[in-house]
Image 1: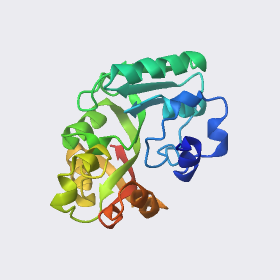
Image 2: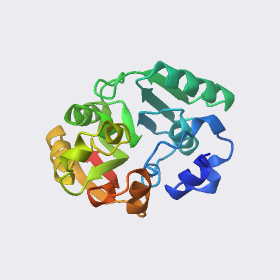
Image 3: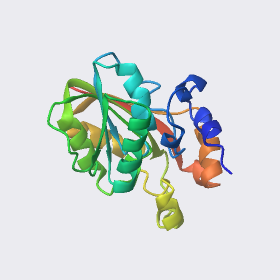
Image 4: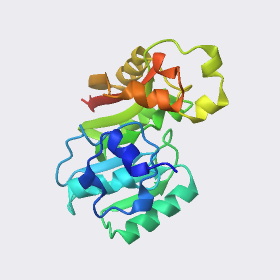
Length: 224
């Protein structure tokens, strides 16, 4: 049986992150900790793309306080139902979950201070559209802090066309230069795309050999 808490600790979460958070919210599906560099502030509005059971949303809610707000978006009704149950269980009054696709966010223009996401954008078929949507909903000066799988080298066809690797967040990874170009095209500035510590070991555990081509990266950028 997989020890999800241990897995999360290896991804960069702290022991204190699990205090008071519904156990069912942490599904161990991420590839890092996007909150580690997000520098969330009291009163900010945070949007989580692909919010799953709500774990990152609940951690963000602690950081922004009652004067802040957290919105989680997920494309599956089952996840939205689970996340809402977890929010009620943990009495998170400043968190809401919305059903929707990250290519067409159910969020108003210029309404979000910070966008976080954990190993979800690489699954999108139209990543460029996702980045445009992120830019649209951010307030001027807003920022993104995303943990995701990015390709550091050309992914060979045998991996790119493997359905298991697609579902496992490996095959759909874009190359670093392509991610940067899409962010710039969407209008983002101050772009930083950096590999996360321990990435090779994590990828090797998922798909031995794939660590030669992809890694877990932290993607940061700001809306001018």
